[in-house]
Image 1 (tube, protein in one colour):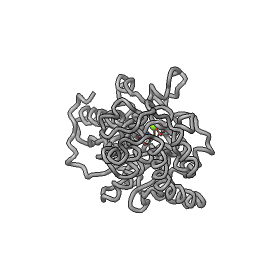
Image 2: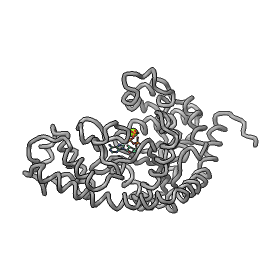
Image 3: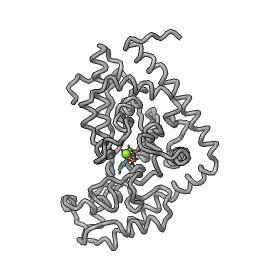
Image 4: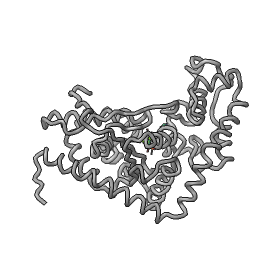
Length: 346
Ligand code: ATP
Ligand code: MG
């Protein structure tokens, strides 16, 4: 991929777009890989647009009532993590219909060969890919539409989404090339920090995910202090003490994961964490990690509970965000379709 020439982003104003699926309760992985960094980007003064991607969530089965609740709860998690819906735009995807419309146009730009290389589809469809929804297959083209609809130049994501952002760049480049234009920017994935890929607490080779059937595999933002401590205590590890150098974690995925989580929560580097805990066993490190996780997550979880007491207010916030998103999206959608040769005469 990436054989097409990329458009330099110098012609585009810096703008961040990212999203999270309301496909379940949010996890520590979502917090460290996404939410925490979303708030930091907003505080750096960059224009930030954040989306609860409900159209992505339905690529696998969602109970309608659970989807509604998870969407509101995810909105509460954004706000509780420091995303200010006045300074950022925060909305749910399906309220801005341009996402689905641009996705259709980009379905016709993306190539089947590109889609067939997407590892998330392979992971999520599993062995029974014939039974997966067509939407799950087309998911990356919808994600490209989410990003390009705002001419976003930067996309903060976890490591697992890098391939999808690269596909977005390929779709943008092919569109620009085919229509002899420089209409779309080439968005950069921003994958930063100590915890860009938080692993399952039960299996150090698997990513922590909100849709993992095992609740013990993840820390949910809504878990109480006892549950967090218990899950960390039971996290799979090896019997060795922690090394003093990063090199010593090379073949110890589970230990490395817990060190990375500690580092990200404490705003330290993994090296600094090993400087403090090198030579110690998990009997000492796990309780320290549990205390730190509770100290950082409890205020978020408390604020989420408070916000969830007023779902109508959350809905108003999402509606307001959708209005503001729509104002940016509509002209870009219109122009895209016009470039492709469609008559726009309303
Ligand atoms: P699902 O299992 O439904 O796909 P998920 O936990 O993978 O849920 P997504 O909504 O797909 O969450 O992803 C939202 C954001 O969180 C993305 O930027 C993704 O890269 C990031 N993210 C998800 N899981 C992790 C993780 N384990 N570590 C770091 N970042 C993560
Ligand atoms: Mg995911």
